[in-house]
Image (cartoon, rainbow, N blue to C red; front, side, top):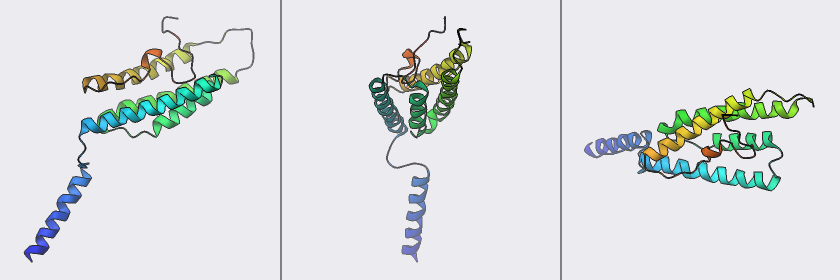
Length: 157
């Protein structure tokens, strides 16, 4: 009877450890692995953009958004990660809208593009700030303000 109780207690403890994410990996390590994966995805897609000459910005940004959406953030990065993924989705749509517009001698209104770029930058900067606060060195390309394939514009323009 005591053996059965001890076995059940061990199973319950194991289930609690697994349910709480106690795989022996600290939250710092999980966050570091998230940023490593993020940087790996970003580097691969930047290489793709350079190879293609960046001529299909909507497709490149859709690929970037999809790849980043597939990276699983730890809890403390979830909100910023989700905001970045959402902003990238809108950014891709705005780029596609620009690409699909009829040829016109009139210069298009760039405000929608600038606004969504600011959202992308803010989410990216937030992730970099989180990493910095936790002592993790990352280079997510926020300063360039654009996902792979996009041409950066300054907010002052």
